[in-house]
Length: 317
Ligand code: COA
Image (cartoon, rainbow, N blue to C red; front, side, top):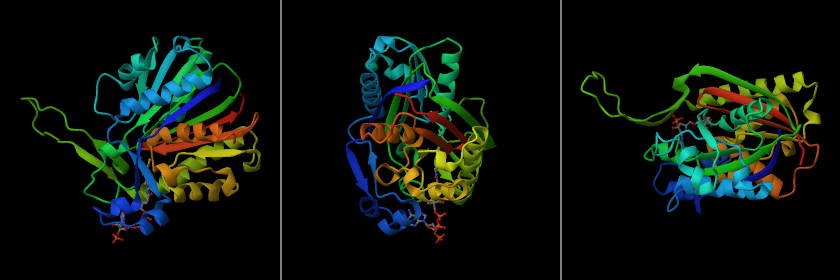
């Protein structure tokens, strides 16, 4: 499997830390030193479906394929205003696709999990050309009266088109069931038979615990891949990590090794865009001509669950 096209899309509206400090008890200094985030893009006039379609259409155009040559659509999305139908159904026609598709929710680790599925579908002969679309609006499930979660997130979408090839080398997935570390609970309709109605609740996060687990589990995933593939950090050109916090990225680098230059970041511009963060960064790096034939790339992400995932590429255009 290899990637032959990428696309990304961010909302037009850029929100700075100072903008947040106008209505939250926070400040630029706290957010910058604790997270590395300076700005994020938030949905205003557009909706998530517009971003999703824009990113997907750009990825298909970059791939050189026609939409009718895409055999399957895999969408990673944590939540949007529709519980059903899935986001893949909602955007399929607008992207110009006729193939089947499905949605997955593996929180911020959705992209790497979708890569594993795409690889399996290609190996089983089920599909040759696959579109993975990660579209996320985490700012819609934060409590905007509180400063703890709302300052961390941004909205965005990233997409890749994959076809047969030998670039995708290895993948490791981890799940440690712990709902309480990070969750968003949506309210549901009441029935005449229910005794404990639970109304929805905005994102709840145990920040410090999540920080520690993210660093240790991601480092473990990456080291497993390095060991399995007989590689050292010096062999890797790019460690593309989920963009949740600059300090988490630094923490992982301290354990795994490698220079700061090997760990690119977009967190400062976009905040945490959940499963869209790695495909957005990949799209920007490819368009900036930063990635070369044969580059070794490790991608690694973590999120609510607790889940984490890592994979290795030998880049092939
Ligand atoms: N602005 C100012 N102060 C804030 C704040 C904000 N936006 N958010 C929290 N604080 C305050 C807290 O109320 C607390 O105050 P107290 O000490 O008076 O009780 C204090 O800052 C906590 O600071 P600190 O202990 O330095 O925070 P931290 O180093 O744990 O950093 C996070 C907080 C959230 C940035 C960090 O824990 C983190 O990044 N966790 C992982 C989050 C994440 O990645 N989530 C998504 C995963 S996909």
